[in-house]
Length: 280
Image 1 (spheres, one colour):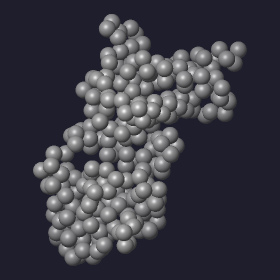
Image 2 (cartoon, helix red, strand yellow; image 1 turned 180 degrees about the horizontal axis):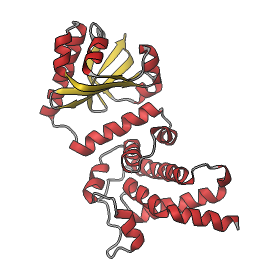
Image 3 (tube, helix red, strand yellow; image 1 turned 90 degrees about the horizontal axis):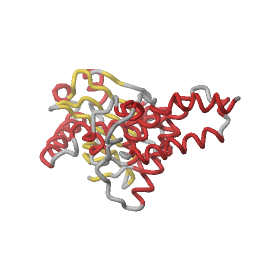
Image 4 (cartoon, helix red, strand yellow; image 1 turned 180 degrees about the vertical axis):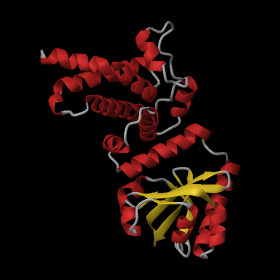
């Protein structure tokens, strides 16, 4: 029977789906609810047209969890300490936690926005592509990448302290000053040798280039530019904005390790810019 085959294929994915849902929601009970809802949706869908059922189910569970997190936020519920899966884990629960780094990670994940959490969990923990994540969050693949990157920074180091944020802002300011003045030597002292510059589709089209890699290439690209750029915090991350009048036309988010810029991500899509919290 077709239904039996479909149920068998779903059961083969259940442990992975529970793992995704648990990391998204921090609750074993809610994770089970999300997985059950995914089964209902699969049973109502045209599964025969799905090329990769595992990937399809993963993104469906991600979408369900995202809706649950947003509903939780709209009710202004305070995040709870994530529960454990079971006092005496069974085989399925052991599979759920097999690759987990523990409750500590889940506590940190509670500090992320729902979309940041989804992008990080799906990409960094379950290797879902940014193209698939973009469909779930309703943004571009470049924006999904930015969400995951922002979440990764918070997971790795938490929110920066005021002195740390000020230090990184000073590095951004030094970069912009060197770029405006065409100071190649200054730029090379700030840029990591393997620095990478990426942008969303709109920004790439404006710059007439895609990814730019390497300190010398990036320095030559920025030398003499950034005349209209001013430092800013973008969703709490050090960066810069380019404004025309009072309208933001471009944002630059900086990845900074130590005293070097290791990455710059540019966004020019108007919808993405409207979603970004900018603090000058």
